[in-house]
Image 1: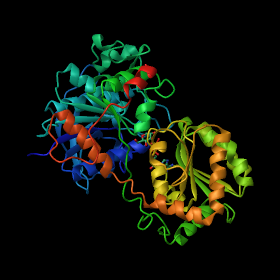
Image 2 (image 1 turned 120 degrees about the vertical axis):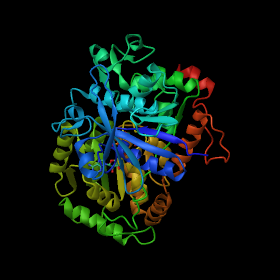
Image 3 (image 1 turned 135 degrees about the vertical axis):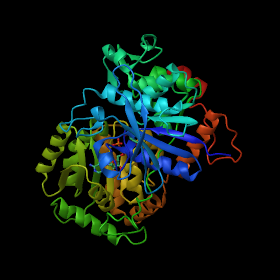
Image 4 (image 1 turned 30 degrees about the horizontal axis):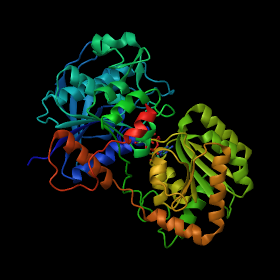
Length: 499
Ligand code: ADP
Ligand code: GLC
């Protein structure tokens, strides 16, 4: 039997172009699926960084444009681990400095609608066998709003290949002005509530959710949360409908196996649960790098995109109490200038005990996690979160709001500290529990051992996605996979209440 073929559509890929966790998922999950015998190929834009980092790209396929979407070429490259990348080459859209979504000054590119319509249309065309690639997928798996128009173009063009849309963050919706509709080839009839329209605008994310055969979110708790008004970002009604027909599931992400304190090449000192001297030495490296005073107190680490979602205003509020109690805080992050300034101000008030590094730096990220006793994650919402899994692997017990993937991957009191009340008092109550554990060396050692023993690899998620793919492609699964195929998320009674 030939392997099942899956096209991944994404805007980020770790090591090539990454803004957050999506890049890590786009690199980690296809590899794990390939280990299960699935032929996954990844389609993404050919940003300049991608071209610069991939020496051997073969350009051959050409796809035509549509409306104002320019034509493109498709390049093919293979990574050392065997992953095949298809690159959408459209220099007028992608050949510019900045992040995948923003100018170097942090403003969204004004033509993002064209940039990601191009990506989506290329995916739809490859699904119908165009582009001269000699390869056609059995299923298309789209990630977040940038690929959101893929299932829509496929529907309008009559491409009958099953589609999965994964929501990594429902708050990012890819909205654009309704007047742009003809320019990105959206038919007039589709601009309505039963289609791509969202409060008078075009929503790429809604297009994907509406037209995809199945929708997944990156944790079971988040999959439930997005059916509620509080966390559905205006799409909760649509999400309830999708859940009711059994087409919404939640699958927790994994993390890369390089997150191993025994062998991580970015760490100056290695360690394991039985010998934590290296962990203390890493803490000293972090203190030195951030000019913090020597201390026997606990080190609280934060590695995060600095955006409202992450609740770091609560950390700024809690800083005094944490420092008064003998704690120190090491922060690495990049994002919203207001949050950067807020944290820098907090650090200036406690120069010896709070250090902030603004920037994106993989070795420093890993050192902070490795050196920290605790990791602060008071996220307002967190679809999955990778940092808390990395933190557990490195014995930096997470202190986290019990939401989304944080609630699904942290065992309260065993591998970390969860709090439900998202407020200063809520966060501080969890911090006090952490301070107590820090004093009780037996409890601290036991919690670290349990946390570090968790694996968080990609195998479990890959098994769940495979079951879903096979279900959607109508392939009988001969061998039972690790987890059962999808089932409705909410019992009917709860759905009635939510509706
Ligand atoms: P999100 O995708 O919402 O940013 P996740 O927890 O899923 O949150 O993933 C964040 C990933 O990005 C983690 O692997 C984290 O280490 C990494 N990361 C975030 N900020 C930085 C930074 N400033 N430097 C290095 N890595 C970072
Ligand atoms: C998003 C979410 C994060 C998740 C990541 C990967 O960036 O904010 O919680 O871990 O996607 O799925």
